[in-house]
Image 1 (cartoon, rainbow, N blue to C red):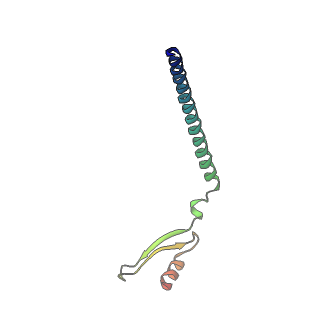
Image 2: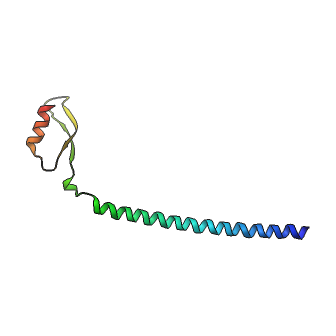
Image 3: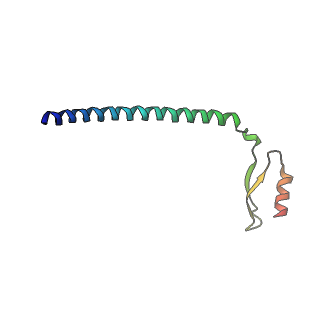
Length: 92
């Protein structure tokens, strides 16, 4: 009976080692998959991202000669000019 218990103990240790090895392999494969996913995402974003010169600008406008006058987060397109800024100030 004791030999049977020892045999079960050895089998259990063997199973535990196999389980640990399987978990390590799964973790490595998962880490590899995550790395590939991140690299693919980075490459995809590089292809589809608009160039910064095409993105709208967000600025805050404050006029020192008029205390309390401040416009936060005014949006301008890259091709707009100072006259467009003046229009936003006048409308405020």
